[in-house]
Length: 340
Ligand SMILES: Nc1ncnc2c1ncn2[C@@H]1O[C@H](COP(=O)(O)OP(=O)(O)OP(=O)(O)O)[C@@H](O)[C@H]1O
Image (cartoon, rainbow, N blue to C red; front, top):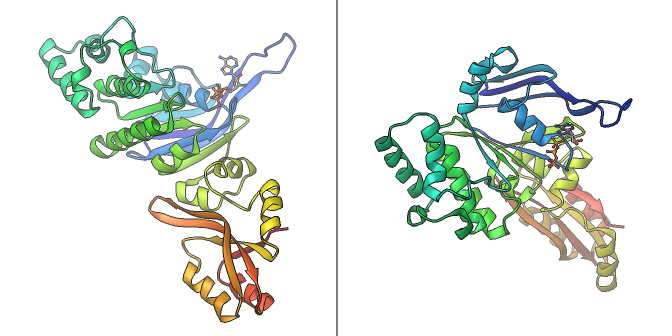
């Protein structure tokens, strides 16, 4: 059984104006998150990602459908039972949400105090967590003395303090620069690998999804429009929204503005070759061009690695030789699209 099971879940808010329509923030979502998995939830602003997170961590009730976390159907639980479920879920946020008047130590101690953990145990746990997130030397500093990346590390340590089974990260890296983001992504991978904690990452940053998630669900207008393994989604995005997200980090065909520039320098035939893990290799494809006496030059695109598998879209200029015959042969090996 999955650790999180959403079945036809909907959340509607009252109309914004009197006489208006209700806002369907989440609209019929069915989704499973397996124990130990890292799921990315991607979508533009207003797609319903944060609302879905609030349904999973029992901060709000669903309007309809069922939300089952660790075998418990949240829609049937009393408040005291919901509180227990909330304790199994840690959260980290875009703005870190640290207590500014408490030190790093005090921030991490807070959930432990609330849970009534003894002072000795608190000491031990906090010191362990500080080492884990690499902030042992910052215990007595205040959040304002820390960088964004360090603040988020405190956020992670505080979320882990109560030993959750699930960590929900809501745009947790969106306020950080790319290098710091990668540091937090690496930390979250360790959280998952070393403690087996299931992670749900809500983000609009595809670089984060690419480097962190096992599986991805793409949301639009409150619905999951596409889901699959991270590799499949990146290598073969089916829905328009997915394609737009994937194209922020993976080159597809060159866009019109680039084609115009390419044409000035490359008068030959331009084709985009789509390499996938189960298609032919680059040496087979370029060998076929060579055999037909066709010259080729790479002019746009590149190869990507996702989940340890490579794929990519390479646009090449073909010149001379038996080009039609070569393109026919290569079409049987990889996906070939003409650039016009
Ligand atoms: N408490 C609320 N009351 C009324 N409408 C809400 C409430 N919370 C969210 N909404 C609406 O529900 C829709 C989905 O919002 P949500 O915040 O879940 O989207 P999101 O994908 O997380 O976007 P963002 O990244 O901008 O937060 C939006 O139209 C939003 O205005």
